[in-house]
Image (tube, rainbow, N blue to C red):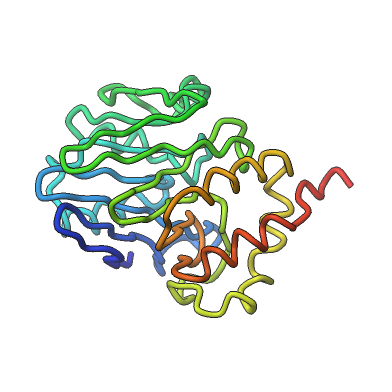
Length: 244
């Protein structure tokens, strides 16, 4: 599994863990994001059970397990959080932040020592030792209770499935040519995103944030002008095509 530092500031860093060439062929590729300071770390969407071993191997090269005190799951999908039962065994009483609606479902993955903190529909602040992250509501994009994470210091938005593209693990890390990337995103967003109303609500929220990078759970990272290009494109894209 690759480990790529995408942000380094005075108080903390962001590292992408993913692009695992050794993963089973039929398992979709996922991006896991580690936010870490000298004393504390959180993983955003820790990943599926099939990727736990390479995730753990990559993680301990960056931070000791004793510093991993927080997990965040944007929603309940297995590629997001089915590894929970294994993290529960190796972490000493971490806290999982996830939408309140999904607690009873997420517990099916195993959660004996981990504490569950339900995120209300309106979002909440995640206060860490060196910074405070913001949970941004993203309901129905694509899950009925869903949240993204914004780092106001790094100016990074973890956007979950929004912005996703299902690509090979050797694809570029960043979207450098937005126009050529559209074909890789279109079907995913039209098929997985069900609601134009929800889409417009999310875009309204996100346009109020100062974003240098938008980091989805699948595919490439948007940076600079590509962030606004994505929002403009997504705003006019018809979604929920299965009902037609």
